[in-house]
Length: 249
Image (cartoon, rainbow, N blue to C red; front, side, top):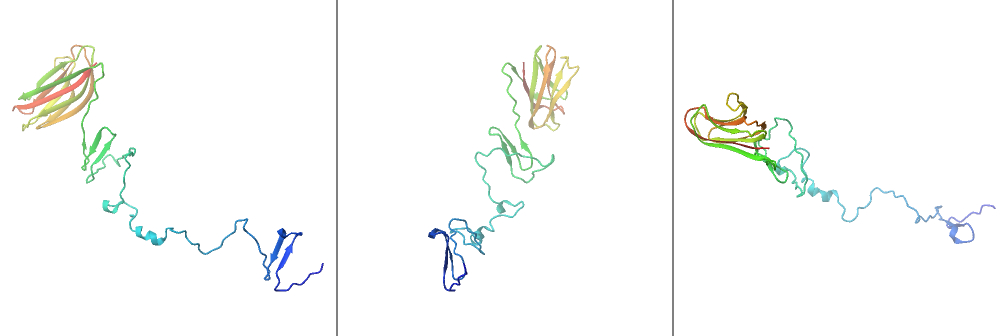
């Protein structure tokens, strides 16, 4: 078939078959009309409009100066942080054995029952709490109080029950002020006659009171005993208190 010239102002329709379902329409400029509604079409644009209410640089400018820069800051230059009421425990690590928290705020560590208070100077407020004696054990509580005017000491004895194990938990001591000072000593007397004394614990006191954990055990044979001694470093009288407690089982 010979080519048939077309008028430049005419639009051409090419049809395959006898129906209009398979038509290709060509415009006068030579472009084929395409229906792309059934496929995804590529888009090329320098910029696209933002949805209504989208954040822009203008709307963010009001918070630009509200967020601190990276690095440690003072309280007034830091963002507030609220810890959740059910927050799990935070691990606490000291930077070095001799690290100081001088000029810091008091820190309270808690397990929900007992507290450990750390002061701003790094000291710790402590309370020595002894575990209760076992159910089948017999508590032992030995104390002495009164004037002491001896440098040799005033002794109070406790003989460990034969075939029993004595656990000494804590030693307590206190004394009124005396210029020379006072001392409370706790000894193990294995022979029961003061010929051999093994020092268990010592507390120096002078217008103070103090507590020392012991947690030592001794087995009795009917002779072995514990000696609680109160004495001064000078002969002047002063009131002194001493006590130790534990249990036998």
